[in-house]
Length: 158
Image 1 (tube, rainbow, N blue to C red):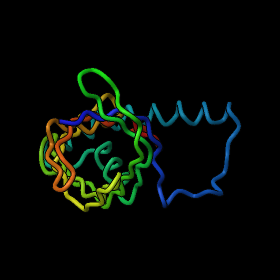
Image 2 (tube, rainbow, N blue to C red; image 1 turned 180 degrees about the vertical axis):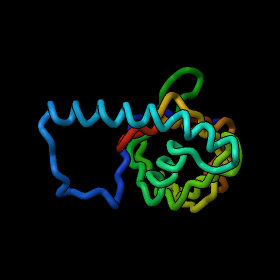
Image 3 (cartoon, one colour; image 1 turned 180 degrees about the horizontal axis):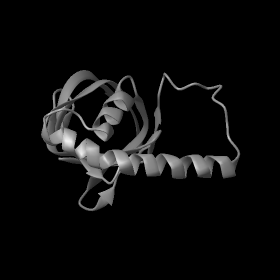
C-alpha cells in the first residue's frame, strides 16, 4: 500500500491569465458577499441532492475538475518514514457523481514510468464547502494500490 503526502497546485487550462485583479479591500468584500450567497445556496443545494440531482457545490466541483491539471510532488510513507519526493501529474478529463458520496474521476496519471488513463471510483466528502477526495487501498491498473486524502480548495490541492 502506498500512502501519498504532498502539496500541489491545480492548474486550470480555462483560467484567464489577464483576469482583472481587485485591491485587497475589494477582494475581502467580494469574498464576504460570495460566502453569504453560498450560505444561502447550501440549504437549497442539500434539498436538491435528496432528489438525485447535483447540488450547487457538487456541480461547481464537477465543473472545476473538468480538464484540471494537478501537478506537483508526492512521497511514499513506509513504516512511518517519508521517502524521497517524486514528481507527478494528474490530468482530469471528467468527474461524475454516481450516487451518494461515490464519484468516477477519469484521469491521466503520470509519475515515474507510469502513464495511464483510468476511470477511478472514489469517495468525495465535504468539509463545509471544500471537497475531499478519499481513496483507501484503491487499486490503480498499472500503478499499484493507493490510500490518499486530497483536499481541493479553489486553485490548489493538498
